[in-house]
Image 1 (cartoon, one colour):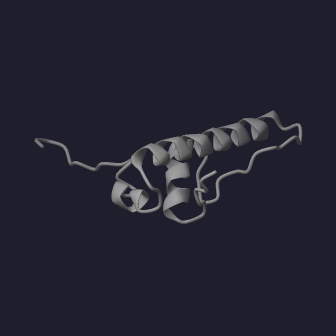
Image 2: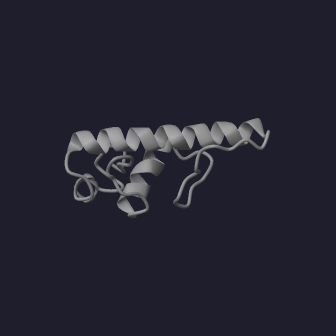
Length: 87
């Protein structure tokens, strides 16, 4: 690339191959990570409200306030902090 340095982020960290080894399909990974991202987002909204009513669990990996919920969810899956249980 001319004049820039490629520095991909997002789904490349954690690697998609590592994530797929934790679940049985890409579809499961998408649904599972999206559900967890919604929980993290709801937790952040509850914390902003500041009324003490917290019904969701926050990020299980080290995070900064500007980290995206979906990225955190994928990092949690890669770090084996979450396990997908089939119903």
